[in-house]
View 1: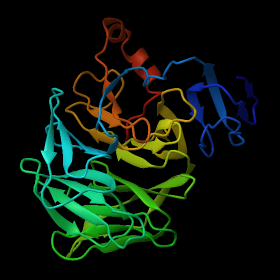
View 2: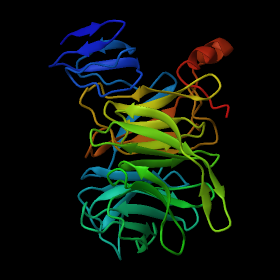
View 3: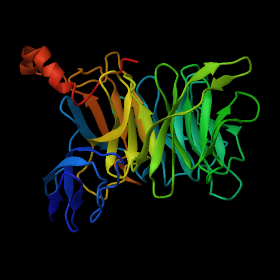
Length: 369
């Protein structure tokens, strides 16, 4: 393989794998062999054979078992249990305890066909699962599944292109409808009654997430998976949540399949190239760019679902064993997952004090919003 680096663009030739130590681009693009990065891009490329790019310094990355037939979606329960939907199973979801012990939850009252997203519902203490059945068939369901018994209830139906689901800190349920522009939309699902559109005129609305302050983050994208990340305020109204005008945080992302927001308000997006993080400035504002956070070093990598659970401590470099956990599906249909946690500080790191902390801040910036 060969790499040509210039101040204007970087070209990756065919027939080899490229591992990026850093990549910030005006329009972060898929690093496919034979493809140019946009003007203004800079990167430091390292040629490796069979070596994966680990998470940044201060984090621990490990491979864990996912759904045996391929993980279609995942979410965390409040106790750290990881719930998985299996691409090959229509009658069960899997629960993996923090200890690693796993059990299957047999589903009654529903049959899963094409799962798009999962979320934990703190109001009902149940797992929410979207299932579009088959695009264009006029179906599309949102199920609520009891993790103890597997009993399923239907919360919404007839949403043909239903994709993701998320629950706000206030307990409001939102779903994305990945229909073609201008029919893509974000919908609020009341506990009783029909879903209501709260954001419209989108193209293939995809991943959903909330920060600790209750702000809604969502994606829309085209069929090449170049997409946008938006943020909207959510407040309580007299008859339900009020969603403010969306603010564009980043556009042209090749990583636009799914998203999650960590305890510090940082946004992680999956897609072509692995797992990315939206860059933020010193004051916490999003810059419109994204950086690779974790990758397997394969330029053809396509990461899909991603989930985060907060811990008592911040999800920061060398944050210790209680800084939270980030898990994602590294490749479409993969039966293994990547789990990322904060590392315990080494004695040398502790001795370095504030000097080391300031260096680490280059890689991760805490929100000051």
